[in-house]
Length: 115
Image (tube, rainbow, N blue to C red; front, side, top):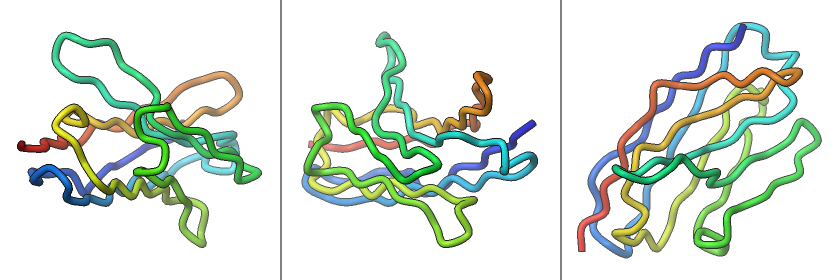
């Protein structure tokens, strides 16, 4: 089992920045990848960015060049640095950890970008 706790969401004006954090606990040695998803009202959940155990990253096209995913030195924490935020980035952001085919989720943190 893996437990995930997110923090860092909030309200920001368009063009602003936010940094999300996700702290993992439990069976962290079994985690293959961690990432961030988002879900806006009435829309399906989508991958924003993820990072593998080996450090490879991938991003959904709308956030490329604006968002950066990284890991803390202890590798138990994943960050999402979000710059040049747009109103369309408004969503609940959820941390995900994948471990041997099983997905674990945090409770989510709301990001709201005002125009």
